[in-house]
Amino acid sequence: MEIEIKKGLSRRSFLGLAGMAGVGAVAGLAGCSPQQSSTADQKNAAQAAEGSSGAASGQADWLGSAPEIAEGDIVETKTTDVLIVGAGNGGMMAAATATDEGIDFIICEKNDKPQSTRHWIGAVDTAQQKAAGVEINHGELINELARYASYKCDMDVWKVWINESAEMLAYLDPIMEASLGLTATVDTEKFDKQLHYTPMVQHMYLEDPALGTRPEKERNEVLYEYIQSKGKDITFKHKLVKLVREGGTEGRVTGAIFETDNGYVQIDANKGVLLTTGGYAGNAVMTKALAPIVPQCTTTANNTPSCDGSGIKAALWAGAKMDPQPAPMLFARGAVAPGVDAGYTGEGEDAALPGNVFQSNVGTQPFMKVDRTGKRFVNEASPYEAVCFASSNRPGGVWCEVWDGNIVEDVERFSTVGCSKGIAQQFAAGVTPDEMFAKQIEGGTVFKADTIEELADQLGFEGEAKENFLAQVDRYNELYDQQSDDDYGKEAFRLSELRTPPFYGGWFGACYLTTVDGIKINANMQALDQNEEVIEGLYCAGDCSGSLFADNYPEYIIGCACGRTLTFSRHAVKYMNEN
Image (cartoon, rainbow, N blue to C red; front, side):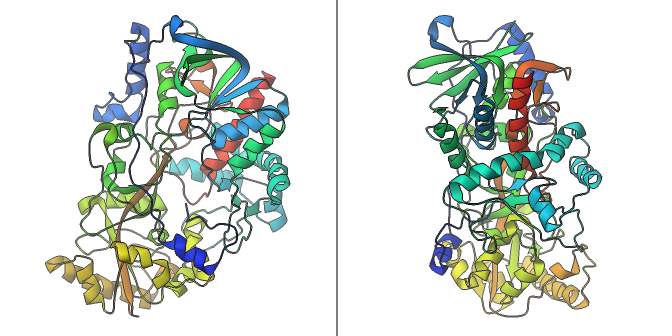
């Protein structure tokens, strides 16, 4: 995610955003004080935990048991046809679709406003792509997606995104145009020298595509105003407690129970319940249990605290099955001071990550990166999470990145795709490196020196590590001169030299955005049970759903996560209505 660039952008505005910082704390999962659940529910929860990645590390205590809510404790019961839980990217698309389909629905959100918007929308065969001459090879695309997941995915589920995302964007475009005067812009940059298949699927709503400036009003706000204009609204301050399933864990899911300021409210759904509650990146306990790679290489968080895994847990309590492999979305942008290790500090729900720099975009540029021993360890042009994962095998789980006075020219030549281009867009607006990193230099996460030796000292390299670092700089310059990375195979056009002062550098770990492993689903977004059979009445979309990703997020297929969230939410609502 790049630094936000708002309407009325000026060079001064860029400077204010360049050093933007955010809180690295991760919010824990809050919930009711549960009573002991039934024996059937306990057995089902145990099976669900065994099917998840947490079982591999012997940690299933994150799941707990479904709360027992006495019938007398429910102060109100409502009935609708479709119940949507979560007013984020998926929920708002589902609500807009349900509105236009004439479906009786209720959308519940535990907060007091819609959730923040993920702006990068991956879509295939759109009108924008056709107008720009962008062609997507479906066979190559679906196999690239499956390869990323080591084929631990359902290719039929991926095909829904490939086949229906263009229709989703065609539905969204008129709504956005009526509100903002904008239709989606497709990214058409394609680089034949890439080592990876990088189909141009990314679409965004931009006021100035050259600078990447987004409108101040976000897509979820637009969709909220849209449903309000048609007499619909979001039911706020409704926190999901559990799902209601006939026969405990055997029959149809018929609704859900929510905690509200006035007590427990049950909402029954005749046609189905759609969970669009997000992943579990805001829950340190679940993260440690399900995605142990995260604390091994992560220093900062940029996730939504509301994504606490509550929807996933509710589905598991109801008998659903979770992906066996974690899939955290990690970006190589978690700037920290020298000597700071990756990983959580504190215990339980109070655990937090140590960094507080909000998405230092330079981290995902393919400059030379070394570990604490002063040595390179990875192809720096690999997808974002690859650098992060590689660093988990290095001291402290962190790495150092360095660049010289040619940074502006280097970034232009690197021609990265996706949101890593944010730094290039700031340079295009006339921001200098010193201006861009002023706050990080002041905060001690970026250092500037007249010589490499001086920079090494500021970065904390001593003794043998300093000798290694200086030798690595010489070796990197040699690789640049010969235009061939004989050590790690990085593309020649993404090599750079380190000879022109001033020199800059800083330490990084991963920045934790979200998780994309979740409840297993079929091609109609129906949740599956332990036997891979449909749980009638229960649907999942977005980051609480699974069946697509394993171990990583395919970063070079830009926006596929948000694209599938919007596409699948729309599909699920239409399927419930038609069936």
